Length: 215
Image (cartoon, rainbow, N blue to C red; front, side, top):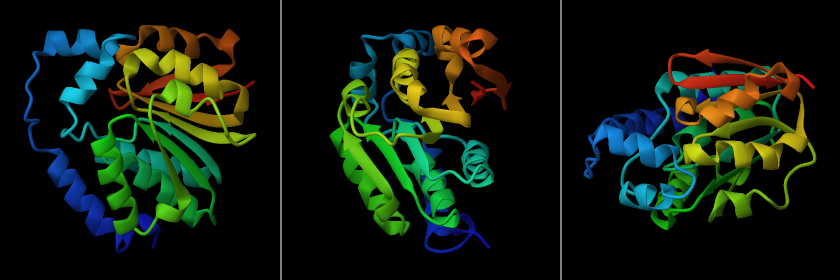
């Protein structure tokens, strides 16, 4: 048995995934949504409008995150984009089952920070998670572990290259980077798919880019 498959976390995740399936209260046309999500400047307004939407990873991606963190023995994890904390809980469960560690996650929407904290407590994993409220380019520019084992990118897609640049010097060889909905950030994909930049990278399950730091 794992932390992921036992109470209190397993029933909590079941409930959160059901809630995440509910249609958002705010409907934004797909074309407009794609343009805003990809923007490096307009994302704040979009995510403020979507403050009640889960914008969660899929159950399959959650399982992938857990397996990657477990199989690499991860102890230091960074996440960009907490939302209500579904992905964070999967990663923290892996840290628990690895014997402990530190997960730094960031979210700029205050109401989501509050809800995420409640979920971390309900899941029994809050002591492993440090949530930083505010813009990721400031929140992740300080007090990071010397070595990072896994990075999850699941915030504003236009910021993926800038956030990776902050974390990149601390990624250990063999570290994984999981970028959700990376198709919205062609600049990011160009970077991680160019071998000269020190990565191996492949698309996974249609909506995720899975990359490994090799140098």
